[in-house]
Length: 164
Image (cartoon, rainbow, N blue to C red):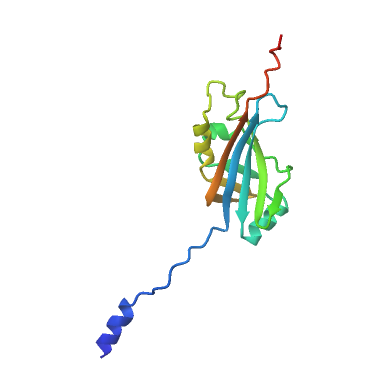
């Protein structure tokens, strides 16, 4: 009888489904915006969903000091600048947005020998994001339904060309 109990107690499996928990922080939307003849520099926009109150408080208190993309080369990271003085917006409950200025993908890029195609920009934006708070770095992965938006507005007329 003892052997029978041990056999069934060790082999019994739970029929309860395993609930997967969402990460405490993930990227819901990331996008690149560039208006070719606009005075504002190109930017990468981020929207994060945060369920960890410690991370939320750090962001709300402007403790975020640096942002980087793990999929971007070291050389390109040098042209990817987060200004800690820029505002981080709280959109709705647990959702925060901010932008990072960059000339990496730009038509007027500092790397004039490289012309970026939309699929190349999407590939880099699809990677993980690093958020730096002082000496702490948090690696942020994508939320399940992450959106990637590429908005390169070339509809402005070239100021050098005139309609005659």
